[in-house]
Image 1 (cartoon, rainbow, N blue to C red):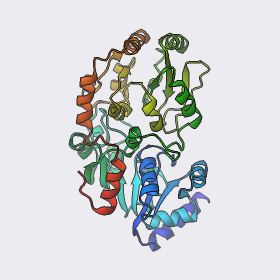
Image 2: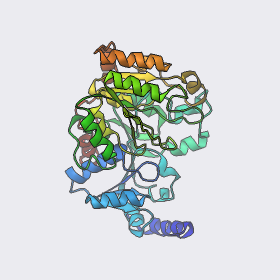
Image 3: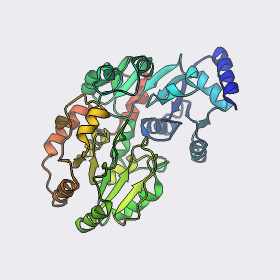
Image 4: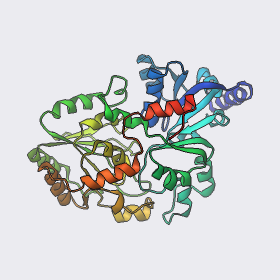
Length: 390
């Protein structure tokens, strides 16, 4: 369908379709990837709330094919069925603002709009970026468009509701119900959890777990400058030899917005697909290494060590993102600026030394009101049963 015909079909549909209050449509990140909070809440509805009509909408044929083969309701946009269903849905569930850039935004405007979002960390987001000293990616008017118009924004605790999300978004309600993607941290992942989870890498790491500690290296992307994989500060051949001696195996998982794809032929380093869902893997991980990514916050629920490799810290906070909270107070683990410091911190973990357990638990309790693996259940009850959001 051409762009002109697509927009015409959307315009005709928005004029004629009433909303069905019971119908829910989930829209994935970017062009409809199957990962994150949207994936895991959708799976909960599809398997645990069969009385609620749900669909996952994507602009990717491979995603729709994968879900269809798994017996899950998927819509390929801009098919007629996708346009009609989106226009008729009473509730639209998203976990980024990517849908604002897509041609289907007119079909969303008068529906109940639920923003799950995709992380609680320490960087400024949303309206807070208007006063940032770091030049942002969006002008004030664009920030207003992207972060406004939500019925409910979901977050993980009263602290984040009050100190971040109520300030970053315009929404009728900010509800500290928890993140659906963290539910899989509390159970053995099932077949559906492993959809788009780099299955080959997952199976390989299950075997390796029997003989080696698994380390997950999950840096965030850089908005403007820098290198998510160490800014040239990592010699991977040297790192591979260190890992071999330490009895460790490193899994590199880039942010899904990181361009390109790494390839590793080193025996002690596995590259996990950037666009795959890493959460089913995380219960296998003994130690996380990150930089400024909020992924470690979710990992706190497992109460395992975290290291921070931040060789470009000064450049990052000056040219990429301004922080909302002091880095030192929000990162309960060693801060490593060089590869030598990283090796030393890893060696300490290998010896069983952990000086940050108390700090991790204190931050976990601040960041998460609930630590029970039932976030999807709470959100589903809130959306469908008029449950109290707390």
